[in-house]
Image (cartoon, rainbow, N blue to C red; front, side, top):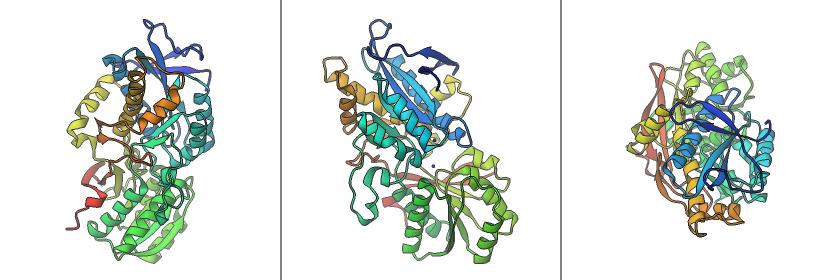
Length: 411
């Protein structure tokens, strides 16, 4: 559930204040910091626009990981900096950002993007430049396993692409099973926003819901820019479902949910991680009781996330870490660990082909992170398939159930 001349955004760990510093020459990685080598980690996310709540949480969490690595000297002889670019949740802008970052030889990897559709526009640029791209939020299975994954014909698409978020094959199926077994829905109306993420999530939901015996009462496709849903409300009401599932993001789903309830459709409304944001509740005065899933387990419930939460608060960021804070920190740390492995294996220095070596090293990265154990399978997907179902209660998302999908409790 995404410009100007080259500048690096760094955040003071104690204040969260932003400082702009020039990147310096592009040819030599040596900085003036006691002879240390400068490694730039790029970041691509929507830091303005309707999805900026998620994007800003991603940016801040990546900055925290970079600051932590520098403070602790995680990679001897290396200073990390973050260059954060705004993709406005637009594929063409994401592609431009990837091209810009790839032109700087100091950039050894990119964290992001938020949107699967944006990732599709960045993957080729990433591969052509041997530049690691690791997303904390992309969930479309096609990105790693190809379009024929449903036929179990899975082929890795890009050796430079990784993610710390599990796929919609897992999330959509979890949602379908949760709707059937926990919400006790028997007939669902399914709506999507026609975007890569929303269509894939809705499709996986329908497949699993149907396998369990559920009936799809109807389907509808909307534009993610729509805010007037009178026609959709009429169709849903006529179909008389006992659950409405939405594949898409919170800017549209918030108003859609409220208008459905205003129109007399008072059954549960459910979606995926693109809905799981505090802004969804701000946009929907009748959000009480709505459901959303999100990848991973709530960081507030993870002992492994205590330090992340405390450090994020201490850093003084103005925006919350939101749904992808923990997975973003882990994605950034995975890149840092790959750089560390490459430097360690090359007598303490970056090799000339550092980008390729870092991309190769990503396949073997493994550590205990904020969200749990971090590692990647042969497709570049995370091995962590934990999903959590949330429900709006008294103006806040409250976790209701967490499980690895394969271990879903059928009781």
